Amino acid sequence: MKKKKPDLSVRKPRIKKNDQVQVLSGKDKGATGKVLRVYPVKGTAVVERVNMIKRHTKANPNQQSKGGIIEREAPIRLSKLMLVDPDSGRPTRVGRRRLDDGKAVRVAKRSGNTLS
Image (cartoon, rainbow, N blue to C red; front, top):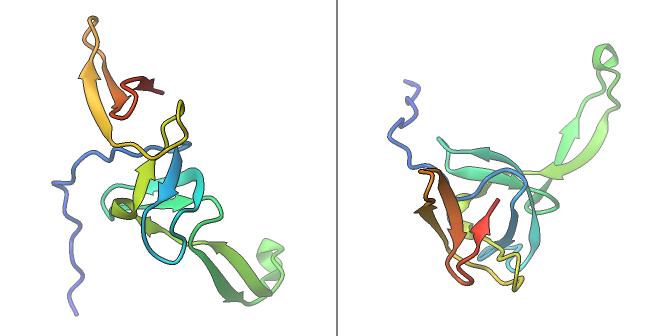
């Protein structure tokens, strides 16, 4: 089977590392957490304590890792996540705005405030 090449015409994700997000749908609906990693080409992100999976691993003495059942976060689709507004604590859409000096910043649509 031929391996599929990733689509490089991917939009820039509105969600970045260390953002506080809320899950909109799925088994973890309503959960909030910090974004640990973002994979723009795959359209997914890893969120702290969200979409937990159990991984059965074998002990590996070379890497000093014990065997057993390890629980860790799995990636979740970006379309299921929404950024949390720092002012109200509620989910908000994200816009972009250019400042007077020409720098582009992210803006919370709910409050209109700039995001880090």
